Length: 333
Image 1 (tube, rainbow, N blue to C red):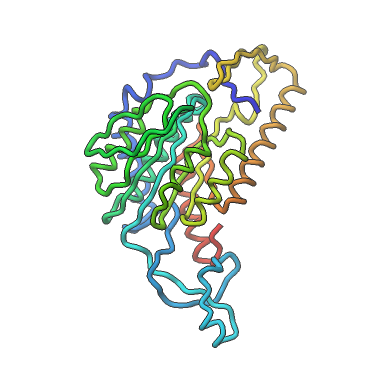
Image 2: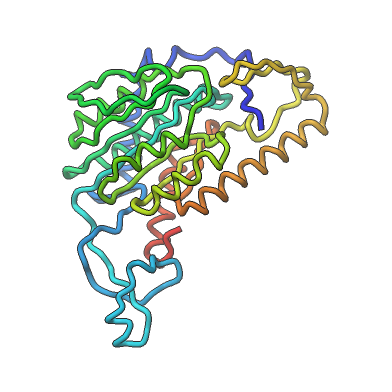
């Protein structure tokens, strides 16, 4: 499946996100606060409510429960499978793996894909940074060597071109805003990114159990990132946020369309008037997305899909509500 973006945009676009990051983040903060505070109550609510570590009461086993939580003494005493509930931790550590490779610098809907990545990071940060909770991030901007962990206060330095950058997990709204400014100000560089290496940065060094959120379009081959994601799931609750654009699912009938691969710079001309070509493209795109969904499901990650032509915040709210409903019924995925 080619990562193709139209050479010419159908409508004029505003200034790059990095040039207007402060205004964008201010609007995002207001939007997220109004919507999420109104619909998602609770000081320790998150996109994936963590199970915690303190032992609580037991209840009967339900399909979908984590077998590692089995309460064997109660099970043996009652001859009915039981699981041990746990009390939610009051201090949650959340890590973001944000893919800002060249394929994210594209969008034909209301948003660019990279803008949806920043918006998702803002929403997750809002839900996380409460009550002493900590949030950190690793950012991938394309090919290149890894950068060492950096310490920062307030506004951290911008990520360099073609590097993987780690921002240490810190608590406090000021630190969280500094993290978001770094994400919004990161310059996307040409070249193929390594999503597997980005996810692996969350595995090394090992961290306390928490929540890991991977935001990407997952266009890299699944064999590159599926194994690191499975490894990450062993220790953490994992949420995979897949960002897609409608033109990645189907082509419009607009005649000869010049397209360019943003990661390699290859230029192609596609005759979109051919219905067979459009059908082959749609079939290939559907197969690609099915492969991505199967790999995420196999890794045990919760899967949230955000589109550039839809209300991403409403999709996130619905996802959180579905996750909570599933947990109350005993199924976690």
